Amino acid sequence: MQRVVKMSQVHRNPRQPREYFDQDALNELAQSIDKYGLMQAIEVRADNEQGGYEIVAGERRWRAHQILGRTKIRVTITSEKSELQRFKRSMSENVTREDMTPFEEAHGYQRILDEEEGATIESVAADFGKTTTYVKLRLALLDLRIEVQELVQDGKIGTQAAVQIAALSLANQGAVLSKFVRGEFAGDNEIVHFAFAMKQQQDQAVLMIVEEMTEEQRTERAAAQKKTRTTLDKIEQVRGLLDEIARTEPIKLAEMLDGQVGARLEQLDRVAESLTKARFQLKQAKAHAEAKVLVTVNPEAEADSDAEQTDGAEREPVAA
Image 1 (cartoon, rainbow, N blue to C red):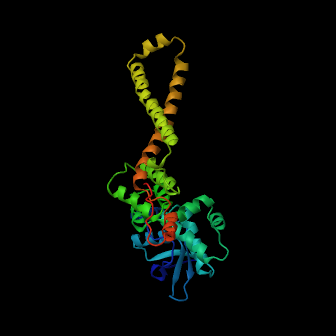
Image 2: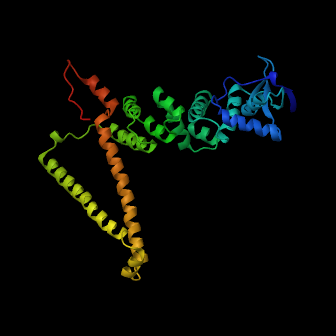
Image 3: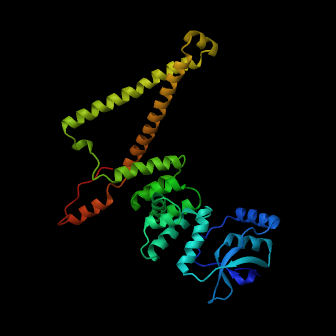
């Protein structure tokens, strides 16, 4: 049932899943409503406790009316629903329109899991048209340290990087946070690489300590190091050859290659593809090297090991 009611009769749901509203976006919506009118009535329910009407869906439209100084608004009055049902209805509208922050979404999914009987990640994902992986990644954000959450909320760390950080122990999240505060990341991509590397090393039972290797292991390690470094040294030779090609006039190249230009271009494309892959691996290697200095290896295992120490015996240090 639709009707026009006084704005003073309508109030927001205090448990509305969305808390942040972009002021610029609200101003744009207000301008649209002022020009074209309210295209869709807001959805409300009669509030028998506070009186008036509580918003079920459409708080942005209601706020836009406040900006315009409107005294009345068109509403659709819905039948009485449980508070959780109203919450899900409101959340569904915001998720569909991508109006929620990642943390608002995460808290919303968690509330449904906590309060709805029989709710699972799979059922929540189906209710909101998301994949189970998407919902799991949003929920993972709730494992972040408060300081990191604040940086994500402020837009200083992106959602993808935040998800990688959330997979770490609180101690290792702190290591990432410290590097970020010191300005040691060029951007989110570096954070992702570093956090991923920390996660891999964190999950190891121990890190290999060179001094504890056998003679055979040390010999194999030295040979592998020499081979890898020699291979990378040769890249400089290749770069010199490519620079020579780059300095050659196109008309002269066409003459010298005589019918092989297309084939040679494909050859360079293969080289470029391999270079891109090699660069990615080296970026990962850089992240691993930096993470190794800071990572706390398998924190849970270390805690168990501490508990097993008897008579004040000292623990063997874990390489980091």
